[in-house]
Amino acid sequence: MEILCFRGFLQSHMNIEKEILRSLGFGREVAMVEECRCPLCADKVDEDEFRTEVFIREFESSGLCQGCQDMVFGYRVAW
Ligand SMILES: [Zn+2]
Image 1 (cartoon, rainbow, N blue to C red):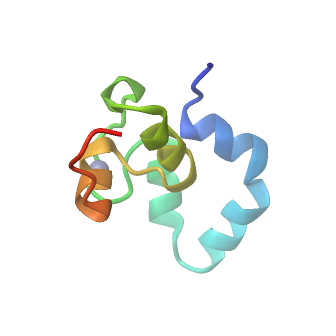
Image 2 (cartoon, rainbow, N blue to C red):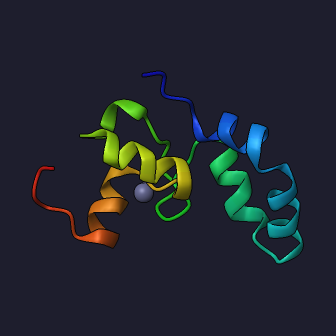
């Protein structure tokens, strides 16, 4: 399975949504995700840090790193 950086995902699927987000004042978050940075902690996200594909899928939709997904969702048990 090929894992794409969220940047590529954004560019291919979310150009219109991105503009909407920017106009709503989420420009900073959009810029962070474009750099493959987590919008919560601003750390550079490395796909290797994700424990399972479940987290990778969440990263593709939210841009959150593994650590923040742990925090936000409380996933402490291995899938
Ligand atoms: Zn994070």
